[in-house]
Length: 268
Image 1 (cartoon, rainbow, N blue to C red):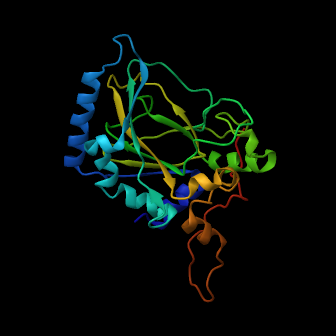
Image 2: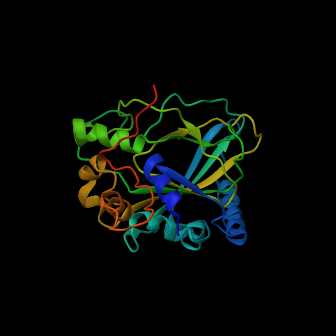
Image 3: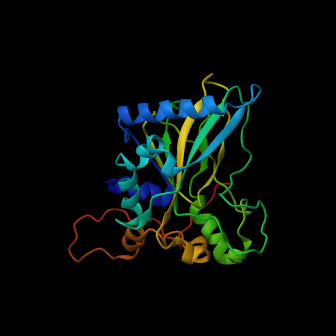
């Protein structure tokens, strides 16, 4: 189970990193499978930066085990509700090959088009689960960059302008970005609407490796438009906690997480 402070961190900032979720033996098996995948289809010799493999989950038990053979999936359900999430059908192996001198200028959300198309909303999901497969203890070693609180400001933008403005780069004001840090076996849980991007890898000398899983609520596809405007639609525990008043005589209620109507104030 996630702690109250971790749930509030996710609610307010849009992501949380949970330490040492995946056992060493599960990590070792996944690492060996990543070695096999890369050896069978290596990146070009002159490749630097991001390199991805998208694999069918049903064919990759060793790569799915860090999610389903560890507490990771249950921790995700702490945010969304027990029994509400479906196991993803795909696993992404994400490499970041040094040297890669890069600093992202702005974030994106996972969308098929950089600009609005007016087409029906497709491809959204509830949350991103990432398992670090290599240590990322300092900045600029292939870390994922995130823009805290933008899950709320993106939702506010879509409420104001409509889900027909869905795209990878909604024009919102941005806070300062952060680089996700952690050790192999740590778990990243990030809201779908959190702005993020690929960072540089020019201070480590090692390939950054991670597994990413895009997880949807069971009924997510039926309310994609609404989800863009209400970030807690798939997160009933957070929605309920934000809406519920403290019980009479409650001695010290925990701090309520932010709601969709309380966006983080961006720093310009």
